[in-house]
Length: 637
Ligand code: DQQ
Image 1 (cartoon, helix red, strand yellow):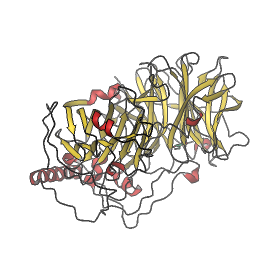
Image 2 (cartoon, rainbow, N blue to C red; image 1 turned 90 degrees about the vertical axis):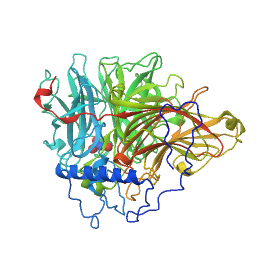
Image 3 (cartoon, rainbow, N blue to C red; image 1 turned 135 degrees about the horizontal axis):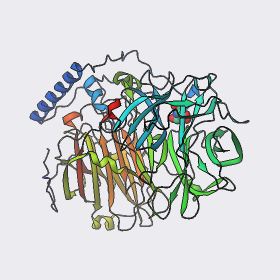
Image 4 (cartoon, helix red, strand yellow; image 1 turned 45 degrees about the horizontal axis):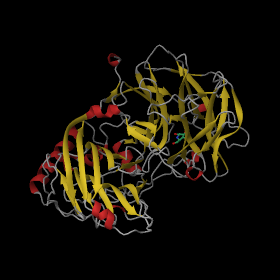
């Protein structure tokens, strides 16, 4: 069944296995007997590998005592404290074992050593170091207890040193949590941190903090301004609806301006404040932006992008050749939305270029799991970098069992798409390429309708994949026009066959395809004869376990004349980050296979279209693990 593909394959029509991609989600329950793999030798070697790894984990003291699955109950977390839901309520707990759970930990994405993490906070570059702060529960793998600021530093955004907690909940004004905030670097190099505190009475206030020793490039110690809070919820705004101050930008009058997310009934709003010294603030009349029906705006981000160049812009830049981006994290659906538009400084107003694509109703940074994101301007490389929190979609039971929850996406550079002018491009920072090890290259593989082709690349749990696809011209011409409405999330996933899709890659698949995660294109010929392309990721058959998320994610992706379909996929154990057409549409999935793990994780090309043959060329790198470990003083340089 498995036909090896020589890595030098070129221009040839390859023999391929005909493995129809099965219908709908798994019906298996955790207790069902597993069908046997036919490849005896492969099974034995995987078994030995798993045994070895479990023994290794055991003797390293990493084995956890799993909570009692029959008495475990999911709890709602976050909402009662005035933030969005932080837990996933999935029942039918699967009998996870330590070998499976250990595999889920990522190798090159940022994670604390243990426990719960959520939003990225105050990212900045300072004296040769990237600083990353994050929402962290030092006491457990769930959102709750008291959230504080974790802190790590890196020379390259990839290898990290964990530092002591930057700020803990030790004041009345942040007793219930040191919540999300942003950094501003003043022209003289001073670092200002503004963050939301949830007070002893759960009122959301804004607080000021600054480095205790600005000469310390690691910024280990932080001082909270003695006269905090600097801002209380203004009249008419709910005590639990006032949070997440942005990085400040300079007005033409030399004042610093920030925006803070809130809501008025069901209208999401961005309040505006001006300050000279970050200690006293003046509320600016009106709102930077408001969109009815979008609910509470969390983690607002506001920044300029150039419509002339691919360089990033400092947050204070305005004027010609500049567009502005407003990003909000919608508390109601937990997705990050953005809009491109113009910023009228005098009237303190953001106007979207396209009101149909306004914030919260149009474009998203990512159509999978990606929330509470924040950008910063990296002055060392002249780029804007985006961080996003990638939560779990397994059960809280499993999170507690593995002792950690959440990862951060690989930081992405953000630019305006100069070709379309109507969307951003997001791309993994170039530094991630330093982790690339050996690669396999496949050129012009022909993938016939209804086939899956295994790619002989060895283990497929840590990969960087770059692929291009072309549908054969005859099929494109022959396909009849239709007025079918396609939507990744509701159109049946990779199992639903159309004339020109789905086709793409099956990542984290096992040999006999009992588990796999398709990342794919689906092309539809509209009634006007134009092709419309969708980019999706289908988790419905990603795991035999039933207590994990099985959604199908994705959206439309613009494909311009003469462009091939292209995708980049970063696979890192339980996270799959995918970028289509240079980052026009991005989808991040969390997947929790039970079999397609360790040496059994494989990669396939697939084409489940009924008419179009697809030609695929790709390069696949094995990825090294990043060094992410506690800081020791001798590692300063
Ligand atoms: N997370 C923080 C809040 C923010 C929310 C609390 C978004 O400041 O609104 O952990 O996930």
